[in-house]
Amino acid sequence: MGADVPNEETVSSNSIYRGKVLHFKKMTVRLQSGKIYQREIVEHPGAVTLIPLIGDKVILIRQFRLPIGKAIYELPAGTISKGEDSEACAKREMWRRQDIGLAN
Image 1 (cartoon, rainbow, N blue to C red):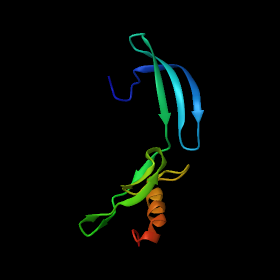
Image 2: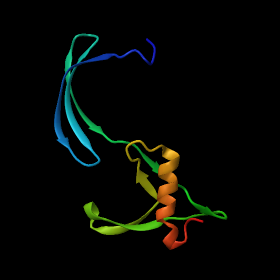
Image 3: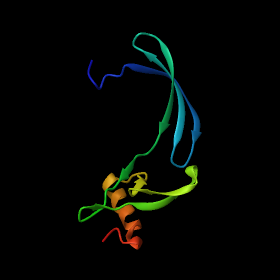
Image 4: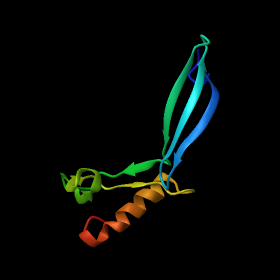
């Protein structure tokens, strides 16, 4: 079977939650065998992660993350906006980091 041939048929799809960035759905699908299964789907518009280098050093940013209640070091990243391509998103994220000396 080719990779582009679906092996599941959507029987039904129900939106559970639609937020600013994430969309949660519950789907009922039928496999080629005829068996019915439930799928829980999280839709996200996509994101980019950057690996900024200065010489041979990787630069991390320190950012507070509410779910864990503390600041952590991480690579700069950002969610792709509607109609935006990944390169434009990457440039936007580096532009946001200029104030801390990470971009030209």
